[in-house]
Image 1 (cartoon, rainbow, N blue to C red):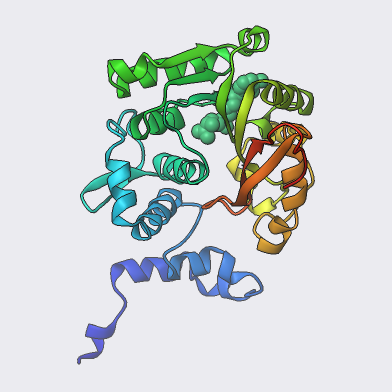
Image 2 (image 1 turned 180 degrees about the horizontal axis):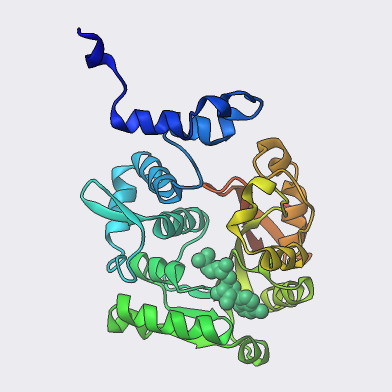
Length: 306
Ligand SMILES: C[S@@+](CC[C@H](N)C(=O)[O-])C[C@H]1O[C@@H](n2cnc3c(N)ncnc32)[C@H](O)[C@@H]1O
């Protein structure tokens, strides 16, 4: 090989004049988390957020069974709203519906959804409702939410479900729900009690105690103050988030033992009342600090922890 064949390409000449410039190599104390290593490795989190999300989705898809992929395929029109997706075994798959899949599988493993009356408090745009109504012959699905998200889920679900499925949904404001006397087989609360004031979440738990037979919750086990994540949220919103919910202890959310140590507090905080037992609980992947639990109202005279 001639000497000039081994010389730096224009690209690497530029890199050696910028990220890897010799004067930037004087202090190597944190080089693995700086531009020096970000230029050598593939995973700079600041510029590669979408790459990370897609890589995570891809890896989660690689762990799905054929039955899970088939179940996802029964949820039609998941492309509505142009989600960030990857293609796996010919299907376009995004993070929201992977989570919906995990949720419906956890719940349906512990109770029958046939002809069930389901209540969801805080449904966002309606991904969970879309999944439940597509996968199970449920009788009714009531969404209780603030007016803006109610409008969003109304529009989204009317665009994604067929007319017969959509007709089974009732949309309700929190005020209308607290005045009503309807009964439900199952209440779902996913990532929303933790964003309400504690007294609001407690009030909902009392209403669940009075009106529901089973309760599934998936929420964070606590709060975090991680400077490396601080760009992810606007600072004023982050400060408000620290004050919300029933579990406000700050922990290292990327320490599995610290997360698991919050289990009992989570189970106690989300138990709707004394007369409820825990059917199952566990870590709620993929986010490190989410826990999930399903509770059932005990038959009369059998109140207790388990
Ligand atoms: C972070 S989003 C989660 C949405 C959805 N469960 C999901 O996981 O995609 C929180 C949801 O809780 C709703 N929410 C917030 N405060 C509420 C309240 N006081 N009553 C009912 N819903 C509320 C929001 O409008 C939103 O739909």
